[in-house]
Structures are given as C-alpha cells and as structure tokens.
Image 1: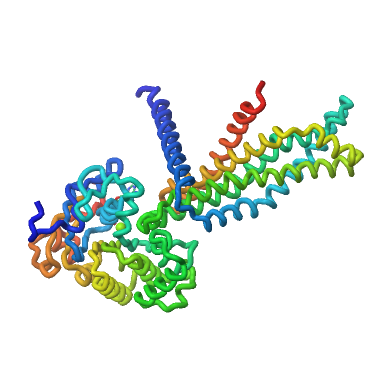
Image 2: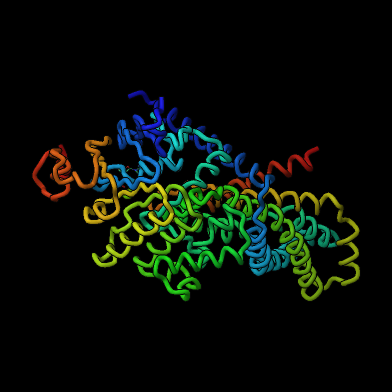
Length: 262
Length: 257
Ligand SMILES: Nc1ncnc2c1ncn2[C@@H]1O[C@H](COP(=O)(O)OP(=O)(O)O)[C@@H](O)[C@H]1O
Ligand SMILES: [Mg+2]
C-alpha cells in the first residue's frame, strides 16, 4: 500500500464518529497528518475539536472509525498499550489543566518523573530549563498553579507538554482567552518548540491569526466532518464558502449559528 | 403509558450503576497490587486519614463511652445488674460503636474531601492530563486512597476502643462510684479476642468503602462546581448507607449462631 513517495502518516484518521446520546459530534472525520507536519484544525465553538483530540488520545472512546498512530491502531487499547502510545504525545489543554496540588516545576517535571521514571533532581533541572524555554523566570517554578495568570498557565502547560520531548504535540486552543500580544508570544513559542523538537503538531483553534502562524496545513471541521483541507498559503483562495465565511468572520453564509430553536 | 415502564427503567439504571461501580472497584483493586507503587502519595493519604482524623474519632468515642456508662447504669440498676456495666461498655465499643462511629465520621471528613478533590480534578481536565502524561489515574489517584482507607481505619478504631472504654471508666469511677480495680478487672476478664477482631475487620471494610465511594463519585463527576458538589454529597450519603448495611452483614457473619 504505502509507496515510498507516500509514507505512512504519523496519524491517520478515517471515518471517525463520536456521539453523546443523540448529539452527533463527529460524523466521519478523515484526516492524515504527516510526520513533522504542523496541522491546524479550525472550527466554531462546540464543533467537536476538543472531542477529536480526546479520541486520538484515548480519553474518549470513538463509536466508529479508524485512528492509527505510526500505522498502528490506537483504538480500544489496554491500559499498558495506551500508556506506551501516550508516551509519544504531549498535550496542552484548553484550560492548561495544571495539577494544583503540585508546584509549577513539579507539573513540568511530572511526565519525566512519573511517566519516564527519572529521578527528581535530574527532572527538576530539565523542568527549569523548559520553563526558561517558554520565557518564565526560575522563581515561577516554586509557585503554585493558583498563583499564576492565564498566560503564565498556558506557558507552564506548554512547558509540561514538551518536557518529555514527545514526537507528537497537541495544542487545544492555545491562545483563546489571551490578549493579542500574549497570543502572539504563545504562537511564537509553539512554532519555536515544534521546530526544535522536530515534532508533529496538531493544534485546534478558532483564532485565524494563530492558525496562519503555526500551521503548514489547515483543515476545517464543520458539522462533524472535515469540509476543507489544504496548505495554509491557499486558505484565502480555498473556493470553499464555509472557509471563506469562517476566516472573514461573517454572520451571513452557509454556516448557520443555531441561535433559534428550529 | 405503561405504568411498569418507570419501574423497569429505574431497575435498569440501578443495575447499570452497580455494574459500573463493580468494574471501577475491580480495576482500582488490581492497581493496588500491581507495581509501580506511589509510596509518597500513599504516605500522604495515610497521614491525612490516620493522623488528622484522630481528634474527631477520639472525641466521638470518648463521649459515646461516657454516655454508654450513664445509660447502661440507669437500665441495669433496675435489675441490680450494675456489675455487668464494664462488660457492656467494652463490648459495645469494640464490636459496634467504635467502628461504626469512626466509619461515619471518616465518611464525612475523608470521603467528602476525596470526592471534592478528585471531582475537581475531573472537571478541570487534570485527570485527562494525567493520562496524557502516561500516568494511570487509577494507580496514581485511587489506589493510594483505597490502601490508606483500608489500613488506617482499623488503627483509628483501636485507638477509639481505648478512648471509649476510658470514657466509660471515668464516668463509672467518678460519678457512679465504681471501684477502679474491679472495673478494669471485669473489663478485661470478659473481653474476647473476637470482640476486638470483629471491630477491626469492620473498620477495614468501612475504610475501604469510604475511600471507594469518595473516589468513585469524584471520578465520575461532571459539569463543573455543581457536579462536584453533587459528587461530594453522594460520596458521603452512599458511604454512610453502605457502612450501616455492611455492618449488619459482618455482624451476622461473625456472631450469628
Ligand atoms: N464528555 C462529554 N459528554 C457529553 N457531551 C460532550 C462531552 N464532551 C463534549 N461534548 C459535546 O461535544 C460537542 C463538542 O465539544 P468540544 O469538542 O468541546 O467543542 P470545541 O470544538 O469547542 O472544542 C459539544 O456539543 C459538547 O456538548
Ligand atoms: Mg474545545
């Protein structure tokens, strides 16, 4: 199947379906992400972007479809296999999801100590180096997550996601809720970290400035399907009405916000 | 509409909940016995349950021992059977009151705290974050709490036994005019190993129930602050009910003729 010119994608998704009761969230998503590529999935709030990431990470069980990581199925794994697959991933959560019972540096070192079985002293050094990478001073490492601002939490979350040098990094709305300058700082950090790791990246956002800055390719999720998928440079001449409406933020167009009961 | 429908639906929901709880228990217990073990977390939970519950359990059993002496004296003196008072106090404390009261107090203190902490971790995606950092939440969060509950409540109950008997002793000597030497002698004389042992077994079961219900309700909480509040309430109520039911069952197993 896989000709040399078309190697196995890092992540391959086919016909992915997920519903919650009668709420059909994903309805046949197809997406390939090549090794080393940075893909951004755009889509409105509640379109199922976070659900897509959680299905890939095994946090939600899909109802139907195929998810392959490095050519191996990543659905219905046992706990041990799942841990092994998740070792390849780093994830920045929408809410940062820092452990509030641990200090900032312990958060960053968590994957190294618990997942990687590294000793605390060595992990601590790496954690402080990663905090410096995301532009945080060493003092921050000794604080508790509750003492941080939103932008700092995102940076700590980013440091935690990349601390284990994962092969694949997921970013769930990295800039939502931040001011434009801090958003740009985070975008630059993401671009830099992904480049330095040589990692495959999958980000989701509804912030077009962010999407343009950090992606090689953009895919648009609407009504549970990928309605458009192409290089970032071509997004302005996609010829797709959904994409046009989304990137220009128009209220009029094929996308109807459900503001009234039908 | 068919009037049997809601009954059937409720019954199915009950079966589903029972199944989910059983599965959760099986998975959590299997992680208690398989490495890696998180000793730091286990130690922290043991201190939280064993050490910081001492004042609550001590006070509860002290006053219960005192009341027990007073009430039994009133009752027994009508039959001129005051001599049985030390025996009644120690038997009631070790077999029943210390384990049940300690279990209920710890359910309120520890079960609620566990449900709130784990529930908050669930709704703020911290449990999802654990999994993405290759750490099994059952092993990291649940197993240490179950082991700590199972091992610490028996110790608390042994302390509670002593304090409860002491409470009865104080009232009997200083208020009811018993002779200290005779009181202690008849306390010891009739006490059997089984009396204490059955109380300790109960305590272990209750400690496990409290931790399990705290973890289970927290782990399955959803929907923000309100969901965490509901999980906390459920943890305490369900643990208390299960303690009282299992108390009867264990007593039956130990002492039924
Ligand atoms: N655990 C869950 N249980 C039930 N419904 C969920 C759950 N997670 C997400 N949903 C539903 O899935 C839809 C998409 O959610 P989400 O992926 O978070 O959107 P977004 O694209 O903004 O990230 C929403 O309608 C939400 O109600
Ligand atoms: Mg989301």
